Picture 1: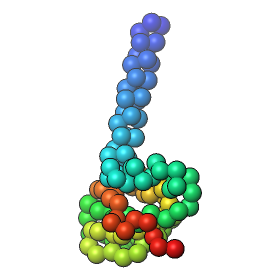
Picture 2 (picture 1 turned 135 degrees about the vertical axis):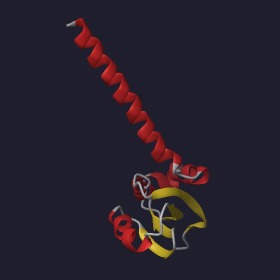
Picture 3 (picture 1 turned 90 degrees about the horizontal axis):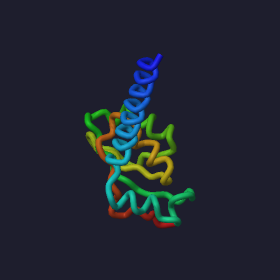
Length: 114
């Protein structure tokens, strides 16, 4: 019985470590400036749009536009493995969870003129 308890505890510790590593990879895809803007109160919990540049691992922009639009991003333009999108902070964070995305950076004109 004691061995079973130790085994279950070790499995629990293993899964908690794996979960931390997975969540760490989502954050590592986001650029440092983008993280700061997403935490800014003017952008964090609002629908204020941020323009970003998404770099993908492969040249699949014509297939993956639909997936990006499903999480709430608007595709502005694309070329090869680079896609420029607009969306709120939550939709950008949701897009960072996709496996095909290598990095998301803040565009130089991140604040859209309204």
